[in-house]
Length: 203
Ligand SMILES: [Zn+2]
Image (cartoon, rainbow, N blue to C red; front, side):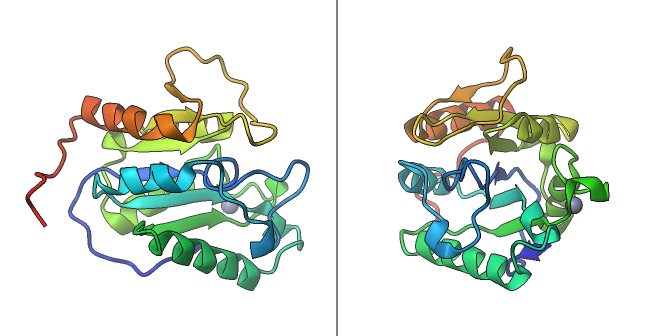
């Protein structure tokens, strides 16, 4: 399930984001079922503005089993997504797309994270070099999905949002503890993968 207007991108990296726990605060034990329940995580809007200066496609990759469970109408998920896009666009942040898995865990679909189906769909649609891309997530399923397709995972752990689902050994996964750390860590990971920033005088 995809919400976006497709645009043609040259082959290159992208910045992927989990939604709940990264873009917006998790609601422990439940889901975001309306726009009024969608609260941006502290500092994320400023971080997204910084990341937008890298001029890479920024794409949301999110499990929303609440749809498959009948708790959320797909039209309401679309409304939440449109509102999110508009709020961010108002501050100059344009998300390229949002990909959702709307299946239940027991559907055994190919897109529910930790499976990498959504990342692969996005890569096909937007001509993305997954091995040069980063995936910012707050749970081990995000890390696993990213690693499965060669993305550099970045673990985002904000102290203001409840219940990060992360349990893998931290080992070599870079961690951004707050939104302020997201830009420098993401930039470093992208550069480590060979990305070079656009010249500042180009437009
Ligand atoms: Zn799915």
